[in-house]
Image (cartoon, rainbow, N blue to C red):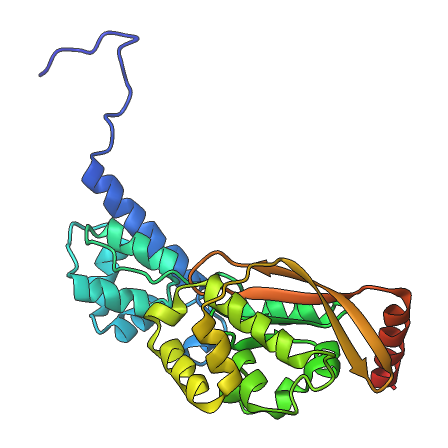
Length: 291
């Protein structure tokens, strides 16, 4: 029989070993992400009388290509060591975003995969924001692909929705579609501004094969684009002035832009009315659209 502990002795528990702590965190992380994943999102039927939300363990195991028992061991913090390929399969099975995927690799002691820097801006939220603006507005990416726009932007520049998705590129529209932006007072100067800004806003023309191909295509198709591009002039402006001869009257705008600093370079552009006449004309255009 061992010596009796004196009263008032240190009854504190010893610290949890780091490896055990890591396994517990991995188990809890997997459980929470599994519970947050809607079965419908991954094509599974909604089951009635479910005791817990999200996917079942067997659902995740099947999607990841492992046995249910083995996956259960992970959620029980058992001392097992999944391979890198299995961790990647688990991340796919749980539809993990890049941040969660990196964390999962770290918990399993694997070097996280290199994640391409992407914008965190939700396209649906961008569209909702633009739809609520009482001024022409649109969003483009680093390649000038038009991601979102509102009806007033269509009134000034043209209806993006009538163009095929692959044609909804600001540079391509300006230099291959003469009907696009035909109301602008100085369309050629506006197009040149877009080229100069495009060249300055990101490295896409240097390292993105699709953008490099677009530039070559436009250089062959448009002498104007070739001249502006070969001048290698750069332009950086957060505000500018734009004028348009709309069928309802002359419109004058002050342009304001905000750009995501990540490589995808999502750029938000809106054209605020620069005078009372433009305010009234936009209001009239909006009322006509509602009717």
